Amino acid sequence: MDAVVMAGGKGTRLKMGEKPMVKILGRHLIERVVLALEDSSLERIAVAVTGSVPATRQWAKDRDLEVLDTSGKGFVADMVEAVQDAGMNGSVMVIMADLPLINPELIDYIMEIYREMQKPALSTHTPLSLHSKLGRRPDSLFNYQGQLIVPSGVNVLNGSKIEEEQEDYHLILERIELAVNVNTSEDLKLCESILGDIT
Image 1 (cartoon, rainbow, N blue to C red):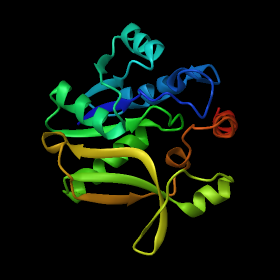
Image 2 (image 1 turned 180 degrees about the vertical axis):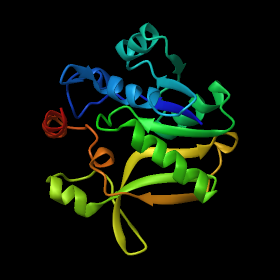
Image 3 (image 1 turned 135 degrees about the vertical axis):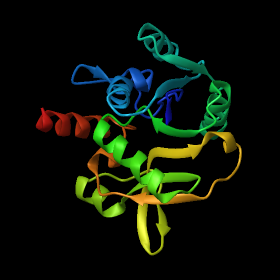
Image 4 (image 1 turned 180 degrees about the horizontal axis):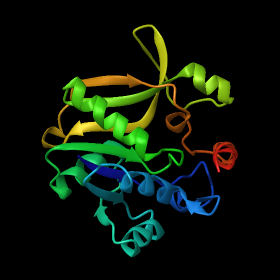
C-alpha cells in the first residue's frame, strides 16, 4: 500500500504560517505524521503540496521525500491530482498532515482492516462522545446508523478509481490519535499536553 500525505492547506485558522511546519515539542506536524508512516509497513510515501506551502515543499525535498505538486483547487481535486500524477493504481492511504498523534501501529491496523473488509475504500471516524470527553468541537459530524461520528482524516482508496465515488467501509475507532487534528491553537495545546504525557 502507498500513502499520500495531504499538506497543501493554508492553515488560516491556526494563524501560525504554514500549518504542516508548525512545531509540537520540537517536531513539525508533518514530521510526526511522516515518521509514523515510515515506521509502518507502507511501501511508498509521497507528500502532496500546493504553491501555498513553499517551506513544507522544501522540507519534504530536503528529507528526500517524493513531492507531488498540486494546483490547490481544493482537497478532493488535489488528492485526485496527486494520486494520478504519482501513478498510484493500487491501494492508497490518504492522510492529513495535521494528525500529530498518529502512530505506526494504528496505521498498520487500519491497513489490516481495509484488506479484511475487501471494499474499494475505507474511511476512519471517531465517535462524537470522544470529542466531548476531550472538550473539543469537531468541524464536521454526521449520523451513521444512529451513531454520531466524526471523520478523522485517514482514508484508504483504490488509486485506479480515484475519480470515482467508491463504496467505503466506515471504521469507527475510539482512538485519541484519530480524534485530534490541529486546526486551532487550542488543538495545538491539547496535542502538546497529550504528547507530553506520553513522553
